[in-house]
Image (cartoon, rainbow, N blue to C red):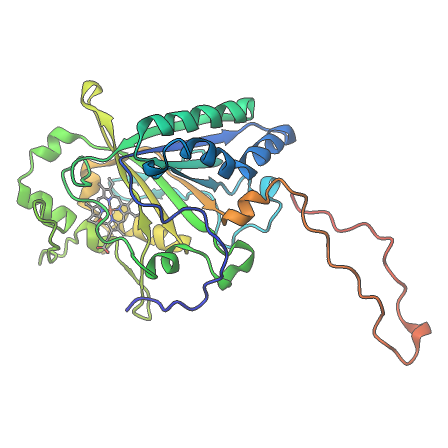
Amino acid sequence: GNRSSDGRVPIEPQTIDAPLTRHAVFLVLTVAPGSDSLDAVRSVLSDVDGLVKTVGFRDLGASFTCTVGIGAAIWPGLAGLPLPRELHEFTTIAGARHTAPSTPGDLLFHIRSDRQDLRYEFERLLLEALGEAVAVEDETIGFRYLDTRDLLGFVDGTANPVGDHLPESTLVGEEDLAAAGGSYVVVQKYLHPLASWQALTTEQQEAIIGRRKADNVELDDADSGQKAHKTLATIVDDAGVEHDILRDNMPFGSPGTATFGTYFIGYSRELWVIERMLERMFIGDPPGLHDRLLDFSEAVTGTVFFAPSAEALSNLGSPPPPPPPAPATRPVSSTPEASPPSDESDPPEAGTG
Ligand code: HEM
């Protein structure tokens, strides 16, 4: 059974649940050292919704959205908010055969649009505004392929949560109030040796993925013990509760340069769920029986971000709210002379930075 809706907090998230579009860009940046860069980034991020309107309004039918993710290394200096409880950098996962590397990235812009020119225009204005404060680590331009297939030829995204289950699976709730309405985001760029994949029979490919290629129907795992990708990526906790994530994978590449890839992006309320999926894929379940999809998919990047709520993002530029005023009267004590002296002249505690 799936989790109940307990624990949701009514805070406006970013547009994480936006529909899959025809085009998407995954833009990963690092922030230059120094507080000037952080100030510049903070001011651009706090007005990113304005920039989305500037571009998106040109064609409201194009489903233009942009989700911003922030990495653990710059979170404290940039956000001035407590670190979301599970946020840390991507942990390299080394299986016997395949490794999921951890690669740099302080900021993620997940840009979705049905029009290629709008995503171009937005990126142009965004990078112009950020200027020298950032360096581009990776820019991957994805496209919808046929009926939402990956370049391996399979329909990708079917098992995504829908309805109420979507915010329940993707948005932090009352378990971490300071981060409520936000979402953990993991990205990985994968390259496919397409010729060797195509050398498999359709039945072999279907066994690896766990669905039929033509009509997308789910298949049972083999008796051999080798689990399909869809099974290794299914996480059920000790209480029998299934933990889902939202995937917005996009194909990318070009036949002219023999580049064929899948950009994986997963949004989750709980980072451990995606980490568990990766462990099951790369190390295997049981260990040794890794996900055969990885024999045809090389992970070349891996980065973790947190996409704060829309409110937290737009407040990034504002000074932190003042501390609550001290109570006007001290608790009444029978011997007021004996109460400890007031500490009002002490400086506030410095942040840990
Ligand atoms: C399912 C492709 C990487 C998590 C699927 C499906 C396909 C697919 C075709 C079956 C249809 C569907 O439900 O979407 C790929 C490709 C990848 C990739 C081409 C990269 C080369 C990953 C990674 C994760 C992941 C890295 C997680 C860390 C999932 C999940 C499901 C799934 C959760 C649904 C399982 C279920 O049936 O409940 N993937 N995937 N995938 N994949 Fe992947």
